[in-house]
Length: 203
Image (tube, rainbow, N blue to C red; front, top):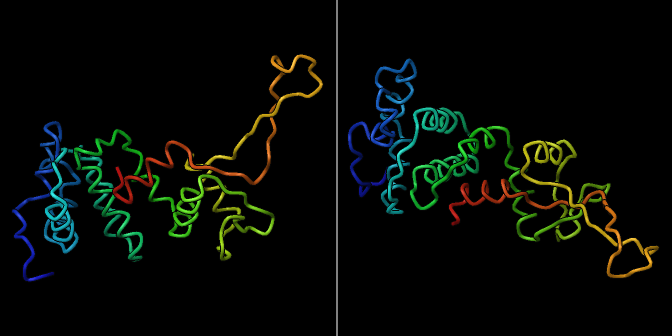
């Protein structure tokens, strides 16, 4: 902790709770909040909160708990950074996150799966061949079909379905659109974009 760190107010985490969650002190899970308030995690989050001059949006007890529990479990610096950012986005009025499912999604991801999503975001769409390489990626990225399937299962990415017109239709202006599914082409879904924006603090 820096000697110039801002002094963290007592019971800071409880001040984040919405009016409907003020009964936190009577919750059987209160000990999680109480323990976190005296941790380095809480101080780190408070420092980022003040540095970024976040205008507070109060959150529900269940949202606060799932963030606190999972930040403490992480050992990877990459994942801790994502959890910190997601937490800050949840309490940031500018983000106004309606998706309370985002922490539950992050719980089910690996750092490599996040990298795959970032590459898709950068290229807008990717094609994955049978050798599990991204056609747009200059260096080979290690991945498995299980990771691709997990991202698809969580509705963070989706296989692209292109359409073509049936050339057998006589009237060019009224041709029938035919589904032309090319396996291996993926793009981010709306949920995937919202997720990355929240985890990397991009409006």
